[in-house]
Image 1: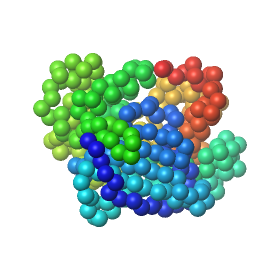
Image 2: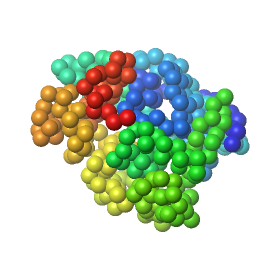
Image 3: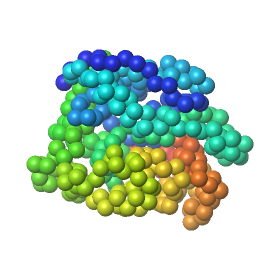
Image 4: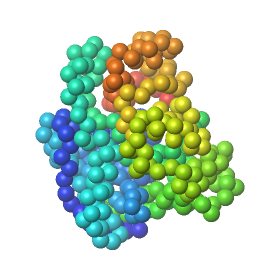
Length: 315
């Protein structure tokens, strides 16, 4: 599907703002729906029943931030549609997050201080909808990065749409509920293994209207948690990621996976069984604090491979 430019505008994030550390997360596995290079991010979106291609460009500085935005679509997009979509973008990437209190409290911290200086203005956030995030989470379960990339590509080729805009071809997610007539056996034939059942169940729950992402955004953390735990395959580990990445709950930190325990224990020099207690020192900012240290680690690894981290990464 070839798209045409439908909108050109700007977004003014709150300052300070770090474009690259916000729009590119080195720890995330690469997928065919986006492309990044310093200062520029291409990203597709399935939103409002439209297939959209977006280009974000860094048009400002850390202290005086500005993002240039180009939106591409198949047909003309109404002003109200664009306005609502921009609001969604601001929410997903946490562009209005006020970091003042967090920086004031921890800029001199022995662990956090140097990290804040290196990636000042970074926002936690995620480009995907709740449904898409769940699909990605299922694909990442219990396998190598290479295998996850293969499975995601297979799903895109069978159910996604290949969009072409501004000289690039990128895949776009399918609409939630669109797998209604796809059988579990069909999904298994795509070599997804047990994940076929999880994907089918999740899609069915969205088809039945058992989850409403827009409504969830307005509810309390506890309400969000209870609703999310009703989704098929969502347990303590998954709900932790969802509350932080999708719903921006910055102080929820009740579970750490065994793999992450090893890495956090190394970073913070704290025994695995004492990590949760240790993170309480960051108070209401604990999830944000740990995220900063985590992202900084991966950025440093991207610049110059860290031997011990490389051993922990399953490729």
